[in-house]
Amino acid sequence: MNWNHRLMNCPSENGGEDYITFKEVYYDEGKPCSYCNPFMGGDDIGEVRELLVRLGKAVEQPVLHEDEFKGD
Image (cartoon, rainbow, N blue to C red):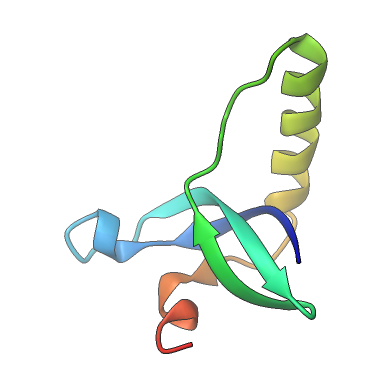
């Protein structure tokens, strides 16, 4: 299983209104299967820089929706 940062629309976190936020998304055989709130820090400035690179990659990907994870 691997993971990356992705942008997700999570209306359940905003009273039913659209809410785009970063999440850590986990994949099983290339298919998104779960997600959680991301850890947004690091032990040193190098780790924070790596985080910024991952977040930059996330904004280049399509936005996922929390409904895509229901019922699996």
